[in-house]
Amino acid sequence: MVAWFSFPDAGGGAQGSSGGSGSLADGAQGSSRSSGALMRPPECGLTLRSAGPMKPVRDSQNRARVFESLGIAPESVYSPKQVHSRDVIAIDLPDLADEIPECDGVLTVNPDLVPCVSVADCMPVWLYDPESGCFGVLHSGWRGTGIVRQAIELAACEWNADVTDFRVILGPHIRSCCYTVDEERAVYFSKEFGPSCVALDPALQEAGFSWPYRLSLAEANRILCALLGIPAEHICDTGLCTACDERFGSNRREGADSFTHMAAFIRRL
Ligand SMILES: [Zn+2]
Image (cartoon, rainbow, N blue to C red; front, side):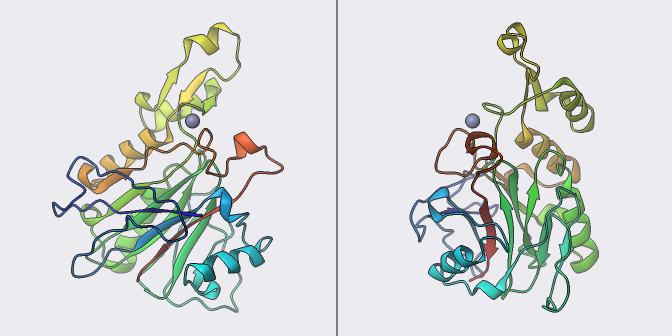
């Protein structure tokens, strides 16, 4: 029902030093969580299609059922109103009377809060800094690619976090095997993040397909993280594609009217 992912252990632990490896554990309670140091890193979860629809507000009953089954109080889950932006919010003690902000990422140092975004082909990016204690999750689709920069800058401003301490997980999303785009979007990514993000597929071009470029959001984010100064061994790419792996909700595979919103969340134990 939920896939769990572990932050790379940059201290030389079990996950090695080559960028880590996302571990996906099926079942309600994952078994491949980080084996903790003194202070355990937060746990990163992504509800699978089998958990049902998890869109905030619309699916609040199902969300409550799923979170409660994980031992998470639904009222501790903090989900922004997502707008495909690069805006991130830093939350310590949310005032429930406040209107839910429009943004696409949530960071906190409060262990009682569970930052959460919903995704279905867009990339969830989990962040954690063991030094400042800051942790959170971002919704990074193609429009939002670059949101990691805003998150790192916000954490530096709010909690004096140092970019080199961050651990990052690039979560399941639609990958270049399934993600074809038109020339305009390909050129944008090539200019903004680097030419290695996009590749023209000759077969698609020959067939006259109007979206013949394959786009790698993971590569764009790896380039961005390197530019920001996050060490490569702190970055873990789960390597999973939501569009061709049917365990996941996917806008492109399931269709825009009936796709399964998945909840990507992060919690401290
Ligand atoms: Zn795929």
